[in-house]
Image (tube, rainbow, N blue to C red; front, side, top):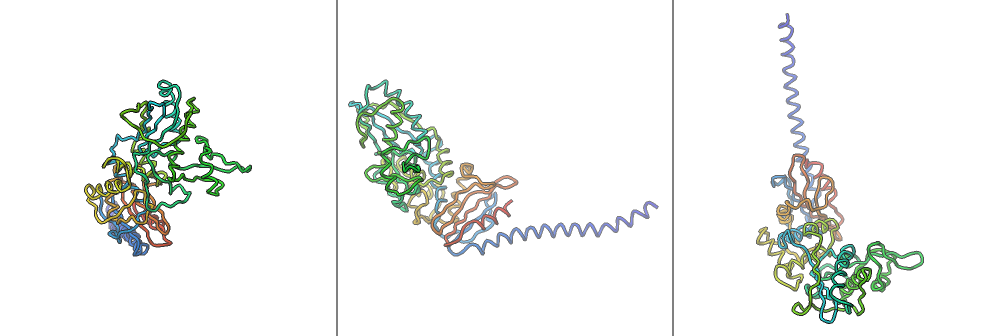
Length: 414
């Protein structure tokens, strides 16, 4: 009885199981079709002046359109600048700033392009420097600023004479990214907008000329304004440490055979930390400080933009085997920069060991880029199974952004 009852049940379940298997395979097929179809939908979003390249965790191409076309990368070019800095300067590199006393008791400061000489750092420097000065001199006369490690002037293509921070000039001795952050009180008086930095009288004329009521303006390179501002801020912090500069602030040069080195500040920020902050703030000033410093490091001082561009281009051609591209500066602010999605992907492959230095949003580590009618993004998407997808999105069509493309990628790259 048991057999006669059970056997028909088993037989009746067999077609049902086949149906379940069939439905399962159909669902998988539909998922695959949906996955491929959604990526195919990218074709409609990528115009003639755009490019997209996406690869899986093993470097296999998942989607490609116009990947060989030379387009404007905007700030995604900073990935190349960061990679060249890490390779050329080396993992142990730290920017330095030197302090000398000459025979007339003048204090001489020699800059080497440190992009992170910020107020908090100057406070630390002057605390140590005050001790050295007290031990070496009774009274400091002039404060002499030596910015000769970079050539003069550093002209960055794409930078204008605006007051905006992204147009900040570069130099060997600069503080606070060559910017001043201020606000105007109801009384009409201008004050600093950040507690760590005083608003110096030196900057007031520049602020008034801007016509702005608040914000962050840049110092110009004309008449050594940005370098002299560094001197004024340094004098302020030295005075807080009990060291008074009796003379004037002026531009000069170190004579290493005659002047006495009393303090050599090595940055508290490693080159990896500098790169991380470069990505965090997408700071054009920092990018080109790095590029010019690379030029000086590779080809000797003075650092110049052509030397930096040459170093980056040589690295790209010889190490990455990239050809058919054009870079004229290191931040991406210039529309003269041209590179393909294919070549930018090669840069991403080389940068992969350092991907964690990029800005993170959810599963993505990336660099965005924006110019007028230009929207770009490149980086990595974490896979749920480990590894990293690579993506490059270069949108050069006016009025379009990377948003819809990124939504499709994030929804399908699991």
